[in-house]
Length: 232
Ligand code: CA
Image (tube, rainbow, N blue to C red; front, side, top):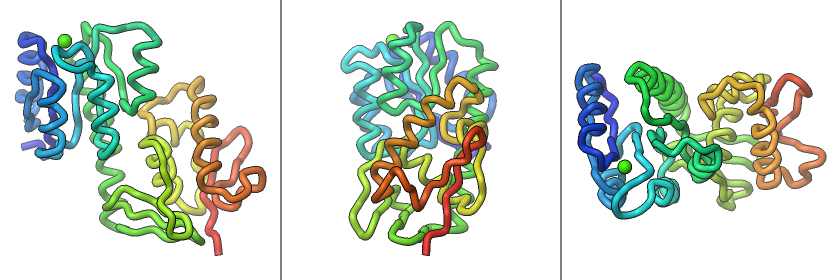
């Protein structure tokens, strides 16, 4: 039995059945919700490993569901929606969705996205097991609590900024290429996403570095990537 539990949020019964039948055939455990409020409750009470989320829900919009779950959880959220406009995708991703699949979707693609998300989860879980707590200069990260502190003051980060910080911290001293970071934080391998990575890095540095123009934690390797330095 696959140990991953998926929360399927979909009000359209035939689509929900297609997804759950697929999950069942591949030994995933799953729970289902047919509206947004139920999804938020189940996410809190059942602590699923991955959420598959439709956006057009009968009570509250899926984007609002993402926003509310993201206020306390970094669980991966894969949107499955008929909305195919770039603005809809950007809106969902900005609120903290990890991936976006447009309806009609292929079952094979859904399974591939799930596997990719699982691989990232396993990497994160393994590194959390080997190291529950990270300290570097004035920076500390409590992986179990999902929070980070600078000189004892909690850093207020978006889920993406936090994932980015954890990835760099877990690889302190190593240069991580743009490609590696995009794959591990966004699940993307598009060179065009390097621009958004830069934006996130600027935001993260503003929070982390006392003087962002001469960073002491995150070093830029122009054209290559970034490295978390060991700070004394
Ligand atoms: Ca719907």
